[in-house]
Amino acid sequence: MDGGSDRKAIFSWAMYDWANSAFATTVMAGFFPVFFNEYWSAGADTTVTTARLALANSLAGIAVALLAPVLGSIADYGSARKRFLVFFAFMGALMTAALWMVSRGDWKAAILVFVLASIGFSGSIVFNDSLLVSVAGAKQRERVSALGYALGYLGGGLLFALNIAMTLRPAAFGLAGPEEAVRYSFLTVGVWWAVFTIPLIMFVKEKRPERTAGISRIVAGGVRELIGTFRAIRRLRTVFLFLVAYWLYIDGVDTIVRMAVDYGMSIGLERNDLIVALLVTQFVGFPSAIVFGRIGARIGARRAIFIAIGVYLFVTVWAALMDSREEFYVLAVSVGLVQGGIQALSRSFFAGIVPEEKSARYFGFYNMIGKFAAVMGPVLIGTTGLVLRSLGAGAETATRLGITSVSILFIAGGILLYFVDEEKARREIAEVEGGGITLGT
Image 1 (spheres, helix red, strand yellow):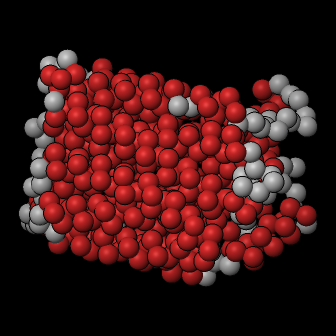
Image 2: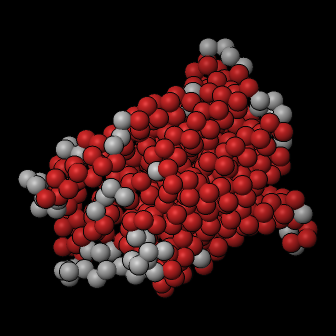
Image 3: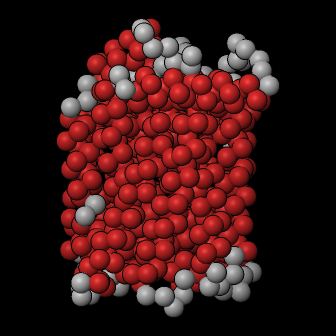
């Protein structure tokens, strides 16, 4: 690491990815779609269940998208990024544990608790992303960002493996059956998330604010800075272009993560095979994220992102044609090779063009874009399936064509990213920060 980097702070910051990835793996991608289908939405048509699941993901995305820029501005104004991160982390952990209490058939309550847990998950990521510029020097951000995602894959994969063992052999854990094992898995994720947030609380430091103020003044100042950022963003054309490109291609990434298990079940694959495939993705993703960080440091984050987009295009086309669990495993490996890379390098690319002292505000917009993307993808699949069903298509055909539509997002995102110039983006921000528009006034 360079001279501006603290190894203990870097590792503690990266461990938050280890902490929250248990939610992304066990809950979001793994057991929640399965349990929602078989337990909370039992008896409903598969197309209806998919639409309900898409609704849950979309509601969570909308809530975070609306909150992120406001919270980011407030956190920057009061130097409260770490405090906001801890609040959302523990909120998410508590709500995840609360899924244990939702009764069979109560799909509305399941959606509500899942949305609140997702708000905690995504809200905390806004502030964790923004702290990257505080813990890592400019030359190390690709590798540090990749380290976070790598630890996330490893940590999430380890707990997911334990949770899978609980569902396959519940008696060995003193549990009555697979259903009870899944419910206790939600509880373990909440505890895991809370416990492994502690290193960040202890060792990641945030600069003391130059100004001290009460909460009402901090909120008012944050809102003023948000208004200033909205005014400035009109002149940040290259930054805006990147955010739109990111919105499109990360939508495809999030859609595949959130809907893969539901898709596999819809075309007749066995639940256990799908869960094992997700576990494979986690352990492939651990070394791959580190490798992608090194590739990004060598050839540039933008070029490495193009490689990942190309792999995802291949995955979406093949997914629509596959018929066997072996093919699903191959797709799982393919996704694992690039998923952490595209996320980590997008984060480090953006961190490299935004000013450190205003990072939470800019990452508020970054995450707002990402969460609006998480709205579009699931809705696209769900709507495509429902429309095709209403036109007389079979359930499996409608689902396959729905997953194919995701490729449009990768193509459009890649085209826009081609026109993004990193140096030009930095110049635009420098002109706005030092020119006629002053953020936060």
